[in-house]
Length: 609
Image (tube, rainbow, N blue to C red; front, side, top):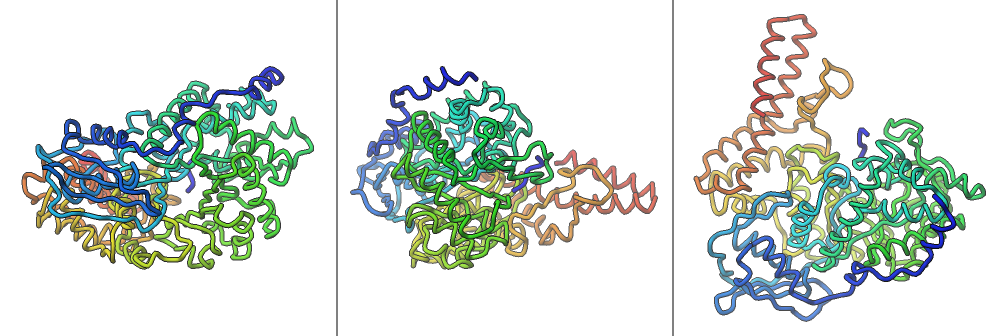
């Protein structure tokens, strides 16, 4: 999770003056219009809208969609706009064999005639929620995205039935107005913010100032962008998860409120300078409640609300006290401020803090959770491919939770993922539904990366009845990417299941190739091939050979070409680890001819990549 790194009286009157509700706030009202889904079809399948009939099913406790045909058209029926969008996604993946990438700018290749479903399809989601994104994604992938990128990504979320997307874009615009209300000048506030790519770790209270000050133009631009993001997500039936105060405040607040309990929290986190340390306001302080209410009210005026809020104190940070009574008082105060501003508030808390630090013993974790009334906190079991934390601590002591696959640390570009392990663990949850407090599944990837395979599997899994094996999914995936049955494409993905996507590696472990490391002859950060690659690269190369023998029609598909390039990149990247090791050994031995030979080979490899 680590990256490497005013004038008060008039402004106070302006802040406290009544402000009209925004259009964004109006967008939070429930709707059953098919218009947003018709617009989605128009964006993804231009000119094909007349091929579809859309109808609503009666509202139900669980999302449901049906596929069929009527009068020569494709019939989509669903319990909500989002269920209709999920049904469209199922149709594209399993009937039309049309992959839709989350990557902006990737074309959607549509057949001239969209096929009718050969048989009726009825799917009911086994869980209430499908969560997506991570604080870190807003640093590793999203910090400079504009509306063009976001529009495609939101369409992908809808096609995969995501109802709880994390929504942190534009957070600083709200905080800027709130901190000015409490007396801080704008220049000081913008200097307290970090640069754009570091904002996730600022929001998690890991560091201040790094890469700042944040330009006002960036803040204003992200506010406008967030309004468009939220309007589109809500139109499609999603409930964006907005931020709330978890205790992180500017150091200047201590100057203005000397009696408030404000103390340094993250000093030297991840090796950053002590000058970038963060400051924590004790949630039991009366000032905390005032700030929480002011922030949530200003956020609602600006962006509206769907009553889901993220607040994550002590992310990779040691709390001021490990006493259970203190931890419970923190969570109680955070929630009480939320509830006073929004009586319908639900707190979405990432479970990474409990997994990351073993000092979070069951009694301490229980105290933190039970500071919040039942059903008012949803825990994200953050990295279930490593540890299903709910099994360690008595199903989160009854608190609602979401089973999450992380899979990508640091925006990694390594082809990897324990597909069999994920399939087995999800099969254990369904069809029984798992623990009674299981509320959903999700993906908490730190970067969008190059492995859509597993994230798509996790999001689709609760819509399927009965066990789903990794082998079954990989065959379906091969057909989707190649555009139909292809023995060579299927064999290539079978090999990938035994190599890059096997269960022997450490999920999410950094596996850099030499071209991604600083030039060195050894020491810290030096790649160790045998420790990092958990399969035989020669076997992986056979998958590439198989893919190259696929039928000609497969090579016309963008998704297949992406897989081909991605696989070739991984094979060559793995080979670079061996070359780096041989190059370093030649250097250490003083063997100049061999050193030059390896340098030449490395240069050729770099050009191939």
